[in-house]
Image (cartoon, rainbow, N blue to C red; front, side):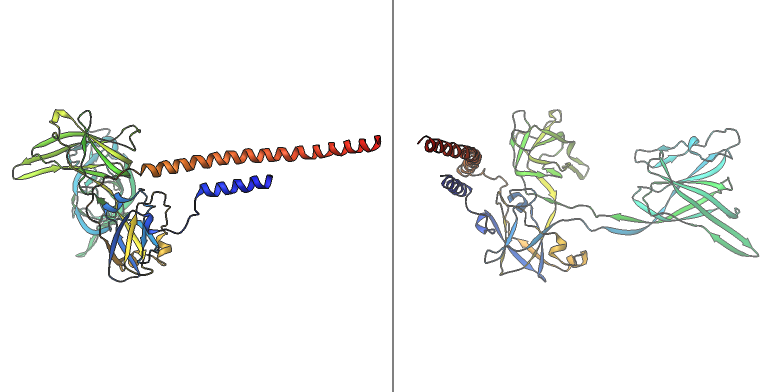
Length: 468
């Protein structure tokens, strides 16, 4: 009886659990697009189009696969795309401002008062008031401009009459308030019998700087500088690139705001609002939420602008977003600016750009597949997929192009019958599990009671024999 119950339990569990997981089947992925290959293999790179990102069921692309002509999966890896960094040599002519103070002070910070314009450029450094002694020229303040450069060498030109060794402290700052020491510098000039020796260059650490402060230590009085030139490097790029969607349509909410639904929750980094009406200035607030039951979260506030100034048109339509996952966006204009019209403006959204690298194994042509709801990631680390991987090897790979056509980003909800069936099976499995626990408890109790019953029956038979 016990064995029969166990067999019945196992059979029922197997029927409810369904068939065992098998290898990926291309038919389980509702979205397919052919891949066109160019260049040298066996590895190929595909810049994932935004249509592919919107066709996925998961933001992390765990439901992405590449199939060959026989329906076999192809090994692949995913990487986030970054713009190549560039370094350019630059020569900077610094603006000079004298720093004055009494002899004997070790710093000019206490007497430094700087006036700046709206762009941060120094326009005046007033002379320090007299203290215990007559103010003298103690050093120089150098304005390097934007602060995007990394100065490596400073070359000074000073009054020819000032000869000998000169030593000074060097500090750097981004805001003229907080100063960081860079060490000390030395310059020298000597002349004798018509011969001259000049040492006007100072090596600097390769760090971004907006302002430099030179304070003379020996002698304490600084020379009259005529010019200060810096040789530096400016780095550009190297950050993450983004991929933009096609135009998304929205709807008007209850309070006049505009609502935009995405096919799935995505970590958006920007949105672009199309302003169709000229001479528009609209303060707006952008909010987002994960689903219909989640509260709205504030994301960004800005002013959208489309204004004609002379012969030029100023357009500020892009909004930077914090990269928080959202499934729906709400664009709420301040009606004091006249709003954005009765119909919702079209918007585009941006995600960090992703690239697919795959190994062309099997039989071409190859297909990109997406959309399996319960898929698990099959992506390999890039260093595993490509032995000896580096940027140079990446540049030699072939390229692939997906044949996506512009599609409406709205996706239908999962089939209700399928969802109901999955829910029924899940609850049935839980009920069966609880029933199995109860059955095991009953079996244990039965086994515990059985020796007692058999012992009592033996004693009774023994008493009957003695009486007989």
